[in-house]
Length: 338
Image (cartoon, rainbow, N blue to C red):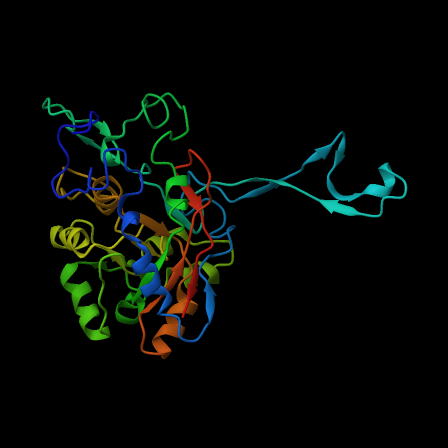
């Protein structure tokens, strides 16, 4: 038994891949499953699944996150941008550019690491819930400093662990927008299964579930000046307060859930799913219990259209995050190939 915990959450994957596992269900992306994903490539067409990383634009959609900024790099007192070498070293003919980028790791198209969301849980077995992350890793000891002290950096569960798996496997696209349009609908298990039946969709162990809701086209149409109220009241989300849906996520063996919206789920509710009240129950269920990564704000519309025109839902998905040690999230430029 691991020394980090005596109890694990009911139905969780803690310890399933070892006491020190930091990859979660990415462990299910075996060579056999990668080969099966490659077999989904029929046409050889690839699609960029990232928004421009300066979208949504501003910080109205999420006040704590801001768009990227380009900052100068200096050579002495000179800005190293359109830097004419001949001015400094006569005879050198090159002209060079460089920059530093200030980037909020979860502003636009992104992955969540497994320590993006944890929970208070009695992992010690002493009857007192304490803050803890996937597989029993702790704030302060493994992730940042003590809660509230502002110290950053994940010494465990950082996004680099996901990057090391290469994140290549079979994506399964679900076109929720085709069924629910622009209406804000919290899709429960029964509704999701009805979509699966109508569209002949099957999700198997090792798959990455992708949800097209239409949020991506709405963001793009706003051209960097988002209407936050409209966005937060438009398009389908998963109903994280549906216990049957959470159980299906556990049982089907998917390794990641991706959406074109901001949170995958109906955030900020007051329901009381397993483990006590949570504003983000799917985040807690996936990241904290199961080791299932979440991707948000992906651009899925073009790939969805291509798949629909071919009566397909499966494709090869390649989506490694930045191999940035200690980060709790990462921008990503995913590629879908059909």
